[in-house]
Image 1 (cartoon, rainbow, N blue to C red):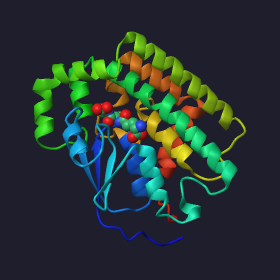
Image 2 (tube, rainbow, N blue to C red):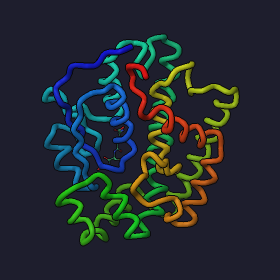
Image 3 (spheres, protein in one colour):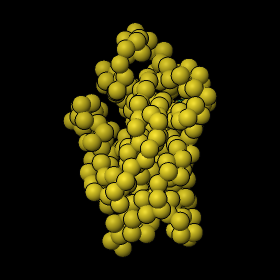
Image 4 (tube, helix red, strand yellow):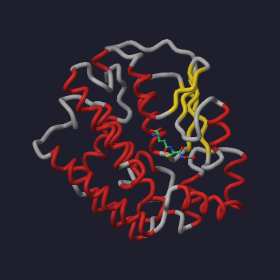
Length: 262
Ligand SMILES: N[C@@H](CCC(=O)N[C@@H](CS)C(=O)NCC(=O)O)C(=O)O
């Protein structure tokens, strides 16, 4: 395939480090859509998100004056603009149902849990947290965060139930998903569903990134060696599983690959 989409410039409102935002960003970039990202620090993203017609969460895609909220809706919006062989959701009904079920599972069983586990470790280390939370953010919010950090950390801990018990629950949920993905990959398949890259792979790799500390996404931020020991040991253990290696491979091989061909 060699073509491109004619589209007016799109706005993607994000929290720079958010993995749900990365999920949307990956789909949009893969389709070659002209994109301007407005990255925020939580919770300063809320006014932008609300004023653009979204709800409080990001990503929000603003396209043709309309807000598309929720990362899954954004993937579907992108797919409507792609020919079938390039789509993230294949047309074949059984394959599509499998992709949709996995995407939904990862949204529920990875997204909130990789985020909680990462923040549990990072928020305890002010300098690390500041570097991570300001990723991609320029201007006032990046300046406001350091003095407001104790308040921001308190709001985040309370909103996402970030405490030792929550982190432990998330660790268990993630361990189960990684085990299930290991099982699925045990027949030697290259992608989670069928023989092509789909929304299941994209969702898996983007949402699991905080607990694999995927090099492509964490470049310029704290290195694995700079992370708190317990967190970095867990990441290294997961990286060594087939599911962990698979997540890293999807980034190394597929993150910059165009939907339109090599
Ligand atoms: N189901 C939503 C989840 C999005 C989500 O949880 N976004 C987080 C960032 S990772 C957020 O906006 N949190 C801020 C808040 O809830 O105010 C999606 O897939 O887009």
